[in-house]
Image (tube, rainbow, N blue to C red):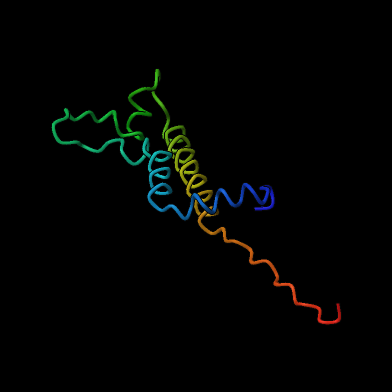
Length: 106
């Protein structure tokens, strides 16, 4: 992750090492996909809550199969990008500094 300073990397490592926070942020970023279409106790079922079905219901015109597939593919790619970024953070590690050897001649 060469586009981050050492300080930024340290913050990202601290973030990934706080597992409850990491998982909460992951859920927050992806909640619109993971939660939509899930029937919840005590709530009236609304199939338009499912993001894939909402593409059809919320369109002001009839979508072709290709347009629908492209919309679903774009959403899936967005989820993949978010997951990929989170995985990159999760793979970060602290580079161990090279131990300096004592020069006995000095």
